[in-house]
Image 1: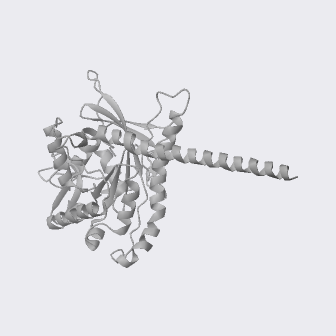
Image 2: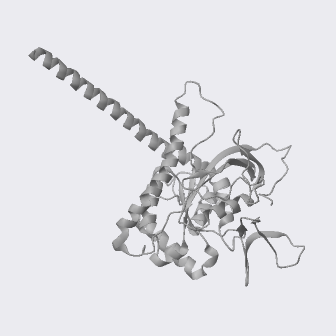
Image 3: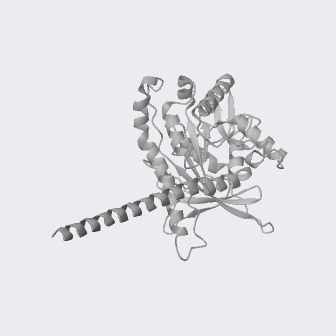
Length: 368
């Protein structure tokens, strides 16, 4: 099985390498792991970088696989065992993908009276996801605290999280569920969250339009700060006289209109991996990633069929720098400030308790 589109390295063009860590989370049975496989297949992969002493996982037949993702069930956020080096436009990206267990959605999720019970069930998943992200912040803080820092230390931070919604669940609830609102509110305090609609090839155009409207209205009503390609019609601090890049503003407006991004995965199986579907115009035509139906083929990289291509370009090209900057200067700094204040409060509390103990001991000696 081919994994990605392997291409020869250029000898004449210098490229900049960017580390990028992407988490994929969301509803159970929405094809998150299949999306990771599909995404890797669309990349111009140069190399899979395994940690020292780690070997490629085995495939379904027990042989070493060339793809860095075993077919196993996971119970916690799990990074792929290898970072993926690939080229995007004129830059080279070193990608770490983090798969996560699906969030169970109760059958009676449409009953508002049961919202508190549903949220309680989702708390462990929220804690697991946020805990993983904060653990990466902790690793960054520890590295920064060293007297001699390692200039080659990897970038641990999670730069973006794709949150997959089950369209059938969203149709039943006419938007987000209470579980979604709770989880998104938790996640958006620690990472750039981009909302996606899974299995969009099963939706009619009217259903897709309605879902986009309902989900956007719910996010706005609940004031959930998901990453939504912010409007750049104004400069910083609302300064309308600041210089605005019209191309960037137009691109952001286009991407905002696509939210939540519609996702289609290529067909896959544990035995054969991803299937490439032959195009309809003959045996000699190029094969494409997609899903074949009796009425035709849905192509993963066709913008008229889904938004995978636009999402990939935003993540790894046009908005990669902004997502990394927000992670570092907003989410990490916010967590770091909270962490240091927590440590300071603990130290002051301990000193106060110790001081009180000393005074109490002195009083007893005076009485004696």
